[in-house]
Length: 185
Length: 217
Image 1 (cartoon, chains in turn green, orange):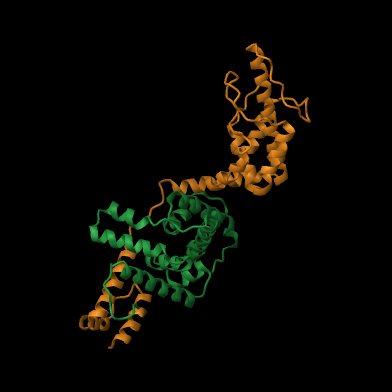
Image 2 (cartoon, rainbow over the protein chains, first blue to last red; image 1 turned 90 degrees about the horizontal axis):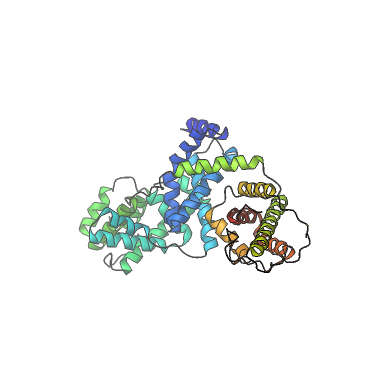
């Protein structure tokens, strides 16, 4: 994989259009998906996602061949989203989960739970939301998330833990999960 | 297993979301109603989050990125210093405005109206070489490459404050364009607009210039 990535990057550096396209197609789902979730606006997400790949192309020379390409690309995506949100100065609109659930034709109670989970995730503070989405939605391992958000693995685990507690707490407050006698994990 | 151990193990399992649920957890959850509720809520939350529909990028996304990159690279070969781009764009704007004024004077003369005298300018004898305007506009077009919609909108906004409407496309169209400004004032206004927005200003200005009628006399 590492050799294959290095080869792909080499071709990209030579300006090979097919290699550039391959690189974008390999990560576009992760990058665009993360941008949509973090920004809450598909048009803005497309702009930012395009910008992410342009930055990737500009920086390919500085990519460390000993590291995997994905966390490096995702780190650029996270940073671009942070910049975009800081400029915008507001939280994203909670649209994703609901729209998709309706489009999928899922059952009503599942739709409602999805919407509530979506709302709960959107209300998380930015760093919690980032690690929650990267771990639970994008399925990135801790090492890659740590690289993407530029924090140690221990911090990522703590944020993830707190994010889950907050999401579950909100679900409970909204009546989507029954009250329990125990503290949530 | 007691409830405290259950909570600790559950947290550990959540950290390794891809692994199967340990039987000890399910066994305890079966005997403790509260822990069972905690477990089912956590499982449901993770399941829904993990199986949220994948968000696909719009069709042609990769192609657009690659094309944008190739245009950006091509433009890099002819990249001018920022001040030169700004100067070039200001010149194009000034020339285009001059052409528009000249055309309006002709239109008024044909219609028997008293001519509108162009406002005083520091370059009263400025020529109107359409080729030069066209070249300036082409240069401006190159400068737009790589500009995002957001950057364009943000940068374009302060510039259009000086221009209530674009110049009329036809000499017969009533003069609705704004410039109650002399060319000198126009230049100062453009400079003022360019100042706070640095590098993307030149690109945004070229968006505006691209909408100006390139034709003249």
